[in-house]
Length: 375
Image 1 (cartoon, rainbow, N blue to C red):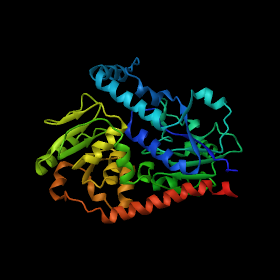
Image 2: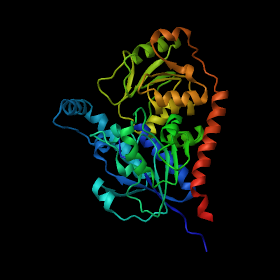
Image 3: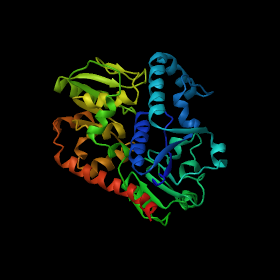
Image 4: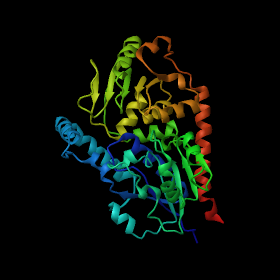
């Protein structure tokens, strides 16, 4: 008789119009599938999920601005959202949808409960009120279940002594804890009896070849050759000047991957309707990348692209942590003038070796979670 497969529940940021969040969810599922049947808890966190609404509005200056932007880009936005929804439908094996109160009162029956990755522990990313969300700490999981965290992060959020007791309570349930940034290991050391491990972002668990196979499912055609890809999330104010200088120096066409109708660069081509598959394909085919995004940095390295990262605190902490681990902090740009002393070509020999080590160690952590299943 065949042995029963493990049942695994994953909660993460999945229902969002965000490339990094969607692709890290996909990669986490891919890795966990080696150990059982994976279901993504379809948690309807409205602070995150509202990004999938075609038109967003609230009675605030920010809400009015969001509505105006959505109206300006309504056609490409509709296409992008549909692409995100299709990607999730085909890849995420979603449970029934749960709202916050429903999830805390529901009885679930999985062998393992995993929280992560992305900034699920950053209260300002997952809550309008700037509060920790107990669901992302697996508070809904049965007391007797095996609970683990994979690459959970709070990004640039700074914990204070006021948070200690709350976090201690949330972390009691965990048997295995891993985080994405090394500095978090130190910050959590006194808050849990578990050994805290630093692991890579899930997108790095998949190899270049695996991501190429993912991109093949995109039906979009762009027709660009020899282009510099721009992917900006926090919209660092100097990124446009950096892009123009590099594009002029290397004689590259500028392609901007961005759904924001107000973010444009002179002489560039704009892609405003990309879904997760198109995101991967655009990075795969780029000749050069300039970004201020963590996941933009990850995919630049996955595809071994020459790149520069324009980043400053608080957005730079997780980027600097990753680049320091793989020996590529020289790719950080503080201002356009610093480009004068930069090397545009990039030898990935040493960096790839370090990524292989980090990937191996991260996979080993995941394997450890499921080891006792055979005992």
